[in-house]
Length: 403
Ligand code: BGC
Image (cartoon, protein in one colour):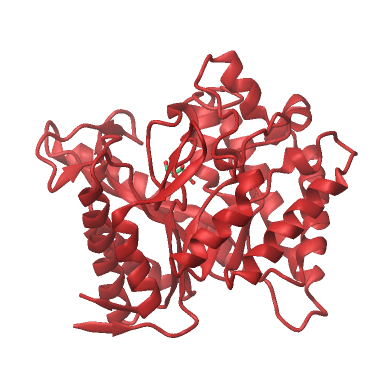
């Protein structure tokens, strides 16, 4: 069966500043890499200097949208010092995207913070919310005529889990109490930021579409040991990690659309009420390069569960890291089949963005995991379109899917 998408459907890819720009020395991750002796982001993909070529590359693949983030620590290297040239740089980035017919979707916070912000206690301190709002106000005002889609945060629960519960990302804290504090502050920042963006766009002809990118997983009880207890933990994980935040924000009317990032399934084993991730020997069909449990039907299942929110949906990230090209192609097509099935069953999906346009810096895992539609040679920053990306490109150009 063939699905023809509306001409407004967004076919795109996503990026984030710290992972691809290079030279972000004013961000907390820069210090963290040094302290933990991790592979450094360094010049990353040199996208800061190559954004024009990368925009043309995206256009040549027939994408019509690109999601990227702004690096707060570049724009505000000090608490009250606005680096005008960096704001002008992002203005240029957005203008370039538009000139390539690529709709920009901008993320304001994608896991990194300015060093001065982190030194003042970061998201643990409620007074610091004002600094984030000052940055938000400044950049939204500067770009409002050119941008429709704003994502205030990327995956806040992933950020909080890794940075304040697991302690594997900066600031390396392991405390549920602190994590709850951060969650409260981030939710406040989000709600105030949402209102602020709406106020800034009040007199403009086109309204802003505001949301946050929410990471969603399929949680499944591990069939080994105690299935009953594992099911209980799995149910709780789904409730808390997948939907609680969206429900909270939906009730407060501060989501214009759902932006979802979906990658894989997680098996859950009982260990205290929330349980823990566990391995599953017989998972079908396979695991990816990072060991993630690939589960394309999960995208359809998640989209069905999101129906109750009664909001348009954009898939702002979906992708994989592999060591064989055919595996990227299988992943892409299987997930697009799920997307197609959801659209046929009446779910209002408005866009699909692959993570990522380029191979890039995968946080604590460094550069070895490659998610790009284009492969990056880190010796000379050459980009080479992967074979599977030509399939994606054809789908984007034809704006239709065979399922
Ligand atoms: C994050 C990206 C990350 C990707 C792959 C997403 O959840 O937003 O920053 O690179 O997953 O792990």
